Length: 138
Image (tube, rainbow, N blue to C red):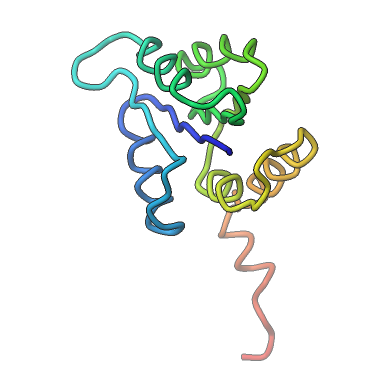
């Protein structure tokens, strides 16, 4: 099974996890951690490692972080040493939904890269998009 953990500075992760449940239903394999919340000025590494240890060794774990180079991503990247852990940064809603809704129990590296590429295509400057896609039929 895929286990998805969204991890962010402050409450972005919680909001994203709740939004995913709005679209995908009350799924049990999505989790979140909000770092640097409630006056805590340290990354919740113990909470994260406990969460991961509660998963099955056969589970494919996705740690989805908010910002490349940020402290959240740096801390999560240390866990790549674990064979079943995948860390992806720059998370957006399209990526989370793609991973969750993909019917595969395990995603191969090529499929993960495809899902990331598709999610990147969801980032669009609408000012240009609208003008390029306007119809002359009006």
